[in-house]
Image (cartoon, rainbow, N blue to C red):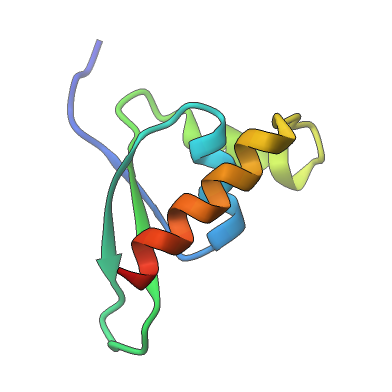
Amino acid sequence: MDNTTREYKTKDFYLAVTIKSLGHMLKRLEPDEFGKGFFYFVFDDTEQKISQVEMDLINRKLLVEPKLFVDTIREFKQKIHD
């Protein structure tokens, strides 16, 4: 198995919330290169599973526990505004 560290980055807030709600750990927030107050949400993706999450989201094949989803929204907003 290849243990090379891979990262998955997205600016999409709700995709990032979904990814975290499904158990993937947020590695860091990274300000976008233009400094307009936008961030990239960066996740470790060693096993390259997050691209499948993205496809399942697009194809409406995901189920996420609602309370966890809402709690993650609050958590991410707190991180952005700190």
